[in-house]
Length: 435
Image 1 (cartoon, helix red, strand yellow):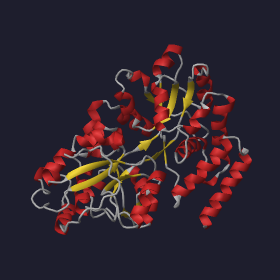
Image 2 (tube, one colour):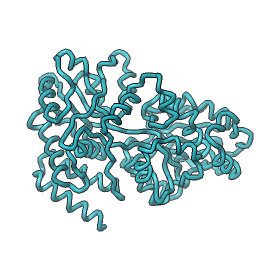
Image 3 (tube, helix red, strand yellow):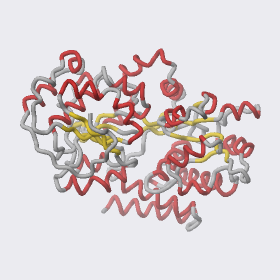
Image 4 (cartoon, one colour):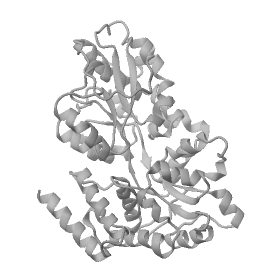
């Protein structure tokens, strides 16, 4: 195989002419992919490379299954380290997509970027690419997410590979040492957070990644789900969420001000450097922590229910999914790879290896049921407690999230009062709706 970790920026490949193969792939059920090896006999083509863009921490998991795909198809998959946020995806890929010159064949696409890519016609519909049996493998609880963030008028343009929920990770070893339980309310988050905070040693009760673009919005929306706010409306309860975050930083001092410049790598480094007692983080952190073998112990990252605000213990769901650009250089190879990665045989293997590739599909949950997987257990725990909250939707999602980013930053950096920030937010959202 080629070096999977080399970055491919812009490469134009010769297109093949195997339309009949694409039709065969679309007609084949996922169970036939590995059993019958339907790719191999016919995929004799000039272009032997399929470029897959995904965040680099998923490379190792993908490399456990790609040799099977490559041996059956005669194709080579080149992994490209993809952008982290939807905003970065829009910035990096939009010029190439708009010019009809995609640098990649399959990409891990985010909620923030996918609606824009779909409406611009820059990704292909997948209804006839992904077999119905694969779509039926997703639970009914994910259908609203698929209908809003992955579809237009019933046409599906993205298939989820990640069920992203902000889980509440806790240092149970620290909590046990002090004889306290994990916080269950905002008030307890503050009071227990104060027991651990020691600014002289750089230890805080909690933290998150608040850098723009995108990550400020993520945490504000998380708190707004708990307060009962409608974050894009900049309503009163969204104001409650913003004020609570401000108070954690400046009044109670359990949350480092430096988090305003932190991304997830910095946030995770604080936690695994023994500087944070508990935090909200995406499920991929489970693998990050376990990867630090000299540090990891199960009681250092126990998932508990999120502390409840006025609306309860809530955490919104979202995630990444696979898409195929309309101008993919190797369209047939892209469709073949996407069917392979999402098949009921392969998807559970990827989920077992990397939580970024985990969704609550029936095949995945069945395959992992006996493994006592912390993320699988957390999905059940959060489901039983009705924690999952719908991700706020706006047809101009990336721009709407930028408004939240900017307005929240103004308030949290003391450049605007809460009242002024909420008014500016409402005004900017009205201008966006009318623009």
